[in-house]
Length: 104
Image (cartoon, rainbow, N blue to C red; front, side):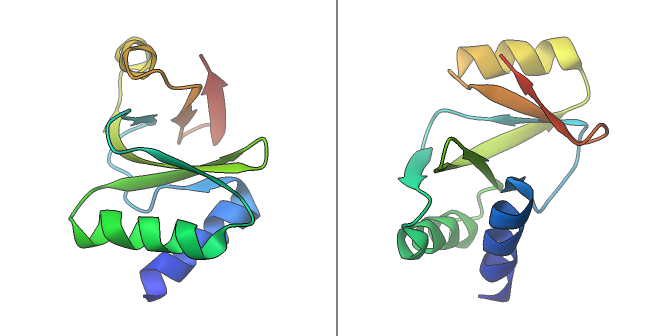
């Protein structure tokens, strides 16, 4: 439960959270992704818990007062990250080194 609360805190404080970083670029995958209005904290928490309990690498993103929760992969190649992001209909990918989102 502590991990879930930490993810929630980081999401609202920093605009998103990916607790496990293994590559420079974080790319959300379309399958199993969910979107919530940011005031639905209980539903957001339950969704994060479901992902974690199923061993899924989870990422969150706060954008336009909505929380996006999805399975993600992490890559070191920008072109590959952009391609996979577009194939998965993502609005953006995240650059962990530069600490910024890259809109697609």
